[in-house]
Each structure stands twice: as C-alpha cells, then as structure tokens.
Image 1 (cartoon, rainbow, N blue to C red):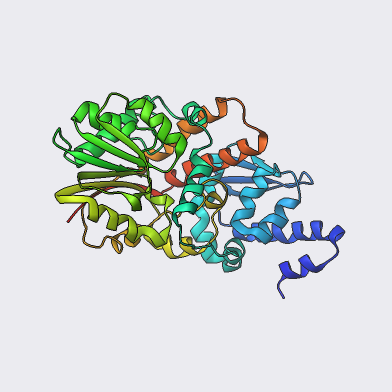
Image 2: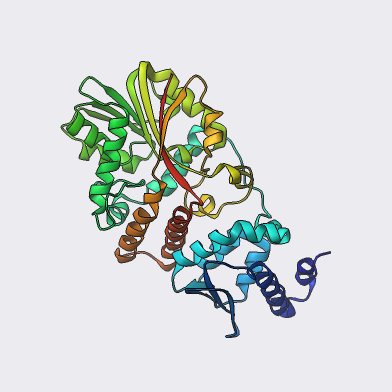
Length: 391
C-alpha cells in the first residue's frame, strides 16, 4: 500500500492535514530540479515553499481540498480545483509555462507522480451524428454575442499569423485566411467546400478577395445563423450538415481547426470525405492543432480537463496519427504556424476578461482554458500547422 492510499483510509478529520503533508512531500520531490524560473507555493497555513531560480510566479493554495483533488483526480483535479476557487496564481499563463517546460523531466524522475496525474483513462468513444451535434452545441452555442466579445471583428476562432507583435488581431487573422486561400490556389473558377465554417470568416475572404464560390458546413445552429447573415449577397451557401453527410463535388476543400473536434476514431472518416468530394486535381488545406509525436500515445490515453469541461469529444491529433489516416490522399506541404498561437490566445484572454456577464465558475473555467492553451503553444507543448493535401 502506498503512502497516498494509507492517507485516504484514515479518519476524515485527520485526512486533510495528512494528505497535505504527503502532497507537499511529493511536490517538493517533483519540483526540486525546477528550471527556468522560481515557483513560490503558498500553502493554506501561510507557509511558502520556493522551487527553482529566476523570475518568480506564485501559486496560492487557499483550501486543503486542492490536495485531495490532485491526488484522486490527477490532471482533471488541477482544473476542477481552480474552477472551485481553491487556488490561484498571480500570472496563470506564466505558471503553466513554467510547469510545462519542466513537466517531462519531472515525470521522468518521478514515475509515481506521473501515475497519479494520469490515473484516469480517457474515454475513446465513437462520435455519432447525435453526439457530435451535442458536443458542438455545448461549446459553440454559448452564444454569438459571447464569441463576438472575445474574438476580433472577423469572428475567427483559430490561430492568427502575425507580421509584428503590435499588429491588430483582425489583420493577423485575415493574413491567416489568405494563406489558406493561397495554398489552395483559389480563383474565380473554384467551388470550395469549407468543413467547419465557423461564423463565415474564411468564406467571406474566399468569395470577396478570390472570387470563389463557397459551401460552408457547420453543425452549430448559432454559427450557421450568423454565418448566413455575414455572407449574405455573396456566392456562399451555409449548411447545417455533418461532414459525413456532404454531397457533391468540389475543386477545393478547406478546414480550419475543426479536425480536433471529431475524435481519433473518425480521422479516417474525415479524410475519406475529402477524398470522396474532391475533384480530380483538386487540393485541400487543413489547419489543425497538433500534439508532438513523442507525447501522442500518452496523451491519447490519459484524461484531459479541456475535453471534459470546454470541448467535449475533442482529441488533438499528432501528425503521425493523421498521416496514417490519409487513405488515398497525400501530404504535399506543411507549414507550422503554432508560434503565433500564444499571442492569439493572449489577445482572446484579454478581451474575455473585459467582457461582462460571466458568473464566477464560468469565468474561471475559461480563464484556465485560455491561460493553459497560451502556455502550451508558447512552450511548444502544442503545435499548429496548415497541411496541403492532394491525391
């Protein structure tokens, strides 16, 4: 029996202090070789532990329930504890950056910590049409007003591409959309299918600047309604349709950060759809978030807080997993743009904090999600790439 299991068997009144003692001991071992900054951990009794050296960032634990959640819920528990207000940080993205930069080395030195953190397996269920609609509605049907307050004027909810650090987000998003159009060699003779059309930002650029005809599909009712309004008068058709239900033939196919929502078991279905609808000689451009290949097997099997509380059913692919799912399609080119995502997320988080009307629990869920994502891209923990595909 481990020390942790013994603690969980004692009387509830004594359990909290004992669990705190064991958790602090594990933390001290795991963080003993912290590099790239100083982590100051303030415990519920006011004591402060310091790890590493360099610029400090503080983790303030207000409630002993933090330790029990972390011990029994692993990675899920960290986010659940933050949502419950049991801990805070003076710089949440910096905290996550520091932890992520040291995560693999710490897990290698302390396999027990990894086993605790990854204690619960990730459900790997198949996503049928009904579940897919329900998952998308959970996130995207929060309301168009909510996303309008957080995003820029283009209503683009994916990685931008910046030319300079002080560039307006709207300009950086338009540059990204034009990159997709140029990779597709889009022109007036093209009929392009966009799988996951969002609020119509790509369709507007493709139609107005490149003269293409666009069919955009989404399974979010809220997105479809606003996308139709934003593309009125253009050669654009917006359909509420799952990608597996698409009919017809298209000279080009675009999909911008939709692939992450479908789950691992449907990667082959996604690319089979592209292959089925793409005209001979046609091209597809798929922009997707990626997990580095060295972490893929571990990531796909372990629980994920964002999948549980923000994007139900999502699973970020690795490039290797996608390459094995292409079928008759071939990867012609790939461009990494993930270095721009941290700044994109920083802008979104800043706008989210100034938007009104969020209750405390919702605000803390989204603060955790945006801050962690910013840190993940800043450290290379996550990637983002545009893939050009053809037969």
